[in-house]
Length: 481
Figure: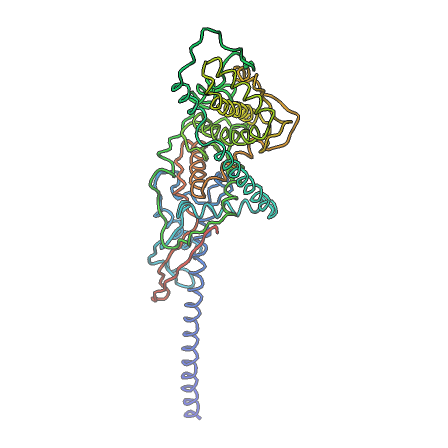
């Protein structure tokens, strides 16, 4: 019996040894597998915690999700971002202390950031994507398509009008007028000149237009140009002019389409003030105009936009005058009178064309003056919406009168701004929008330095961990897209 008992004890010991070995191996395998899952989860948690610290002011003002990677400084703090992810990853494994005291025996050995995307990378590709996604949630698909159709139709109409005018007017009528007057020798006569058939405020309006073109028309369309914001933007330190930080490693392919450009256009109109906006007191007031003109001050930006609007309106007004037999007859009659008073009757055709140009220009001033005051201006003029008479050119230019018509057809100042934005490239729209975001964020928080090229949209991090004396590498990526 003793021998039997001894043989059974040895058998059980061997069996238990095998079972314990299997259990130990199984436990190690579970610890290893569980540890690998946990370190992956820890890295995800670290990245989640980092990207939960998005810039709240940027989200509130501009609906953009970014981490301020500069943390209020001028330089991109990638080491700080790395340490934040590392700390939160370890903390998720063992909230009471880092090291091998967690069940899985996992410990952080080393790591590095292998890729990140900044807002300005690839001419603001990430910025464009976020803007498009935000605006698509605000605008229905049909609204986007209607906007595209209307702007494209306007563009074609204006190109067609410009082609017609170039066919009718080969060169600048005012320059032709100067050459004709300087080259012509007045007729010498003892008889007094014939009376001017059409009285035009006793002053040659062509000379008035020459002076306006030299001095600028801003003072004629804005009630008080001196009341414009005195703020000046330092364009040389803005993203569009300076050397920018660059992301690395995980940059997506750049993509841009017509829809993205329209979304950026509407975003600019929605987020930034223009001359007719109310309630904006800090910094530049004509920020949409800055996108179009790119100048340093409100005065220069508005002047550039006004000049572009005058050109658009003048083409439309010239088309109307050329089609109106009644007004062409008035112009010819006035040109005959002026040429007679100057003793240069042969200059009548040139004077007629210069008067045509001048009348259309003054009507354009009236149109733009009305646009800046909140009125509409039709794309194509008719008899019912023509404002300035040939005889009233001088009196109109000497006043700040805004001629009001009950006709509400046409487009307002905001829509004309949309059209001017529509003529800009995607790159110009994007870079100017990023300029303004950075400019306004620094105005809002003057004690911090905000740089749009420090804004991190996504990040990839590779780390090496040790689990039970074995090394494991893991790579994780997270971002707002």
